[in-house]
Image 1 (cartoon, rainbow, N blue to C red):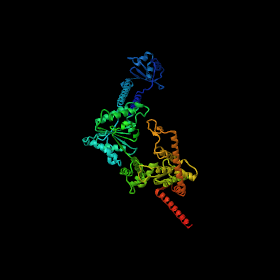
Image 2: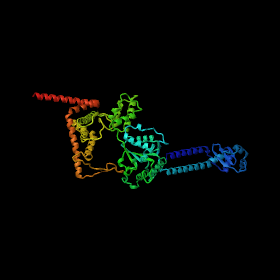
Image 3: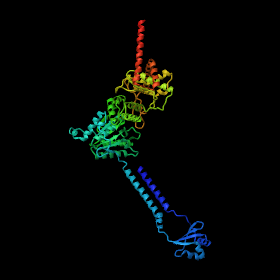
Length: 622
């Protein structure tokens, strides 16, 4: 479409240029035509400066500068005709009559004036017709897929091997078997093994699904066709299924090969969930994929590799054995995996001697491979901004906070009162977390604005945890309410700064009751969630319990929140002096690191221990 508009614009400009040139060369002076009788009167009255005769055309220049023209009789000279009308010899001499031959260039001007416009108009219509034929050809190819080919006979891309993919050992093992099957099928067929028809990569965003697909494309040694799920669906009905047929036709011709469909959930959603019913374009596309993967005609040499982060919404017929035989689950990396990923992303970056990738890996739980790549890049940008030639540990640690919370908002300056409120709020979070059981250690407390937060308390686990206990959840609830309670204790007032904490606490309390079975209602879950295509996630949660049970759920949620509030209040009242000390230190320095925070806690414990000993001594004396 863009090329068509571009060509039309060029043709229009050329047409305007030719028209301008034509008007430039064909411009003639304006002359008034008069009758021969008027010419005779002008000659008799002596008004004429000069007369030029060109064959039968008589061009007249009057003494006042006016130009006129008329025609004479063919075969008779102008002088003879004027004499016939009574003009004397003296008057003829004053008229200054001369004769000139008519220029042959008039034929050129005639061509420009009459033939050239017809030629130009004809050319313009021919060009429009040609463009229309091209458009028709494009319309006929509308159902063709634009799959990008890599590997054998395809595009040259940045070579990625399985060695370039850190962690994900189980996933790599599964895919290496597929690659080996394509390279040496005899090894498997001799024992009766069948090549998998489909391999589905499952995992949250950023864990490396597309990266693994690129590694397969580099190592398989067969043609690799890549296409996105959204490329199948268009506004016209039947285009998606047509493109699926075209894709598998190309794949069969290049068998054995691999077809990679990224974001499979764009076309693989559960059928019957949409308003459009069975005639929905997406469902027709999915039906065609199901038939092509495992229908009456089997594609033994075509392996379909697909990736999605929404396996819960995929159609069951797509997931059954025979279509996607293998489901490869990609998890978030653990500490060791994060360290290996950081090594890959820092290979081409100059690192300072103080860089400890193990420490960075320990400080980044929950980070995906994409997050770690972004972290390494942000650290490099920060070092370049500071005109450094190497990236130090300081840049990495600062980048962790930037990736987690956003950049520092140095322009967002809090007033003294707001700074004081933020300091007590964050100190409340830190203290409740420290003196609650089974909580994560405090890494950093800050009242410097980052992202949308006016301050933050950074808690990072020392080791990976895959299961959480009720005690940990209750401690988390109390910690979330720590800032709210601290504000109320110190200022006898609450602010909007605790709004996000209260929302998270309410959601966590409701999950304890409805999802985790950790309340007095017993080991039961409440509510049924369904994900519909058009209606969204929140609307689809259905009640499978009565109004009476709903009241009991609300009572349990309220009980959890109130008990967490009482726990936080008890801790902060007991540690009131420490709360004041930490808040004042925050107001003074704006940031407290782990070492300094633990030192303050230890000092308080020592003071408390001395007071206890002195009290026991006095009691003994009495």
